[in-house]
Length: 530
Image 1 (cartoon, rainbow, N blue to C red):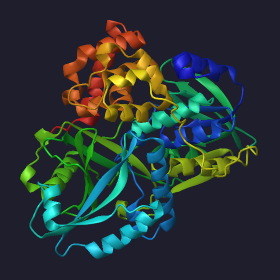
Image 2 (cartoon, one colour; image 1 turned 180 degrees about the vertical axis):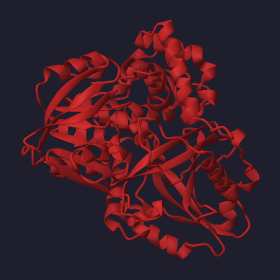
Image 3 (spheres, one colour; image 1 turned 90 degrees about the vertical axis):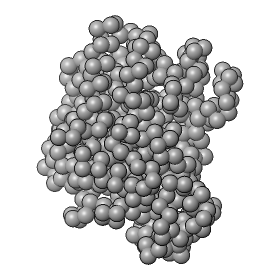
Image 4 (tube, rainbow, N blue to C red; image 1 turned 135 degrees about the horizontal axis):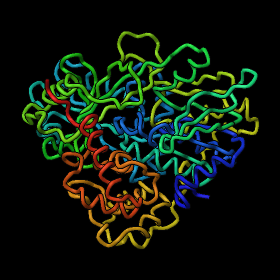
């Protein structure tokens, strides 16, 4: 039974209430939790996944959108992590073209800068060997200047082009979660995990609080998995363990592509502290990021960019593209996420390792750290830990597909260009049939200024567990990041789709619109200058 398509949240709640004991309860609806649910449920385990906010609400909708092998990890000598990441990157591009796609990266070389072309291309030779393909290519100064017309020419000796991949991170979470749901996972958002239930010192369940209904329930399970990322210490500390997570905030600016037109991701060193940053094309926009700052105050509020970070990122862009003359007025939106780094005590946040770590505290399996790219391997490591409580689990890597292969292209997609067909099939997989069936004639138009069809907005409102308007505008679609003032110009069209798909009356719509606007202004716009 597909709870999302067959009955929505009420059906999922009914399934939760009638199940006396789950094999596994997964706390956390980001990419790690979705990956664990996918791998566990495909083995026939009864899996319940709960998320305190919305799916992908935390780090998994606020990353730098890169599915990459981690060239920095190779430079620091972590060959194993780099090799795994590169191979998982290739897997995701092969399984989900249109959602995870190859993107060119370019590293400009300036006179006297480190690393120079020889050292950098030597690293890339190892990097490419893990993929079994040659992506690297050196450009002389003339060709680099042609590729990047706004780039600073003084001292430029050339550039190296290589490759990694780019994705819509929130959409990747939903696709993986949909695969888990199709094979039995019950996934419910706005369901907060509270007190752990313990018997004879073993964790046997959790008390959950339904944020929408205000109802508490006891949920029992043979094993509880905490895939809560930056919030992982919360439950471990309740069991007496020592906190290990160092939450680091990474913030980004979104500007129109016409203000900084680039066709590939550019790596640069910040002029103030020599940190590596990226400026890259994403969904028809240009993104500048990221920062790396301690963010110790973790509550249920959203992280947001600071004025200092805005200035820091604009300074980085100005150092490499001085003629673009970007200002605060060019910024359409911002987003900030908190990365769950397992602390080693380093004074420099950027020096912390990004490997994942797993703890077993008497039936509470906690996983934190790691990379978006390697979520499948992280999930298998979690299953290995959980096999102590569920001996039937096979945690070995059998190289199974993450996504159900598409058997045929829906006839309804013939009305749009091949590029858009590929993209939509990558975003929705086998669910594309339902999207096409829901779409009205006028829905096969793009929301102006974006890469999003109105058909995607309607499908999300109808079938993707949208409970609040910000779920729709910031995670199921990313319209809130692409449209001025969060999409105010299209308020009436969005209202019509929401009222048809979710039966919101005018009063509820007004409440949701005001809530969304408050969230957008506080966490996704530019902070006001004091």
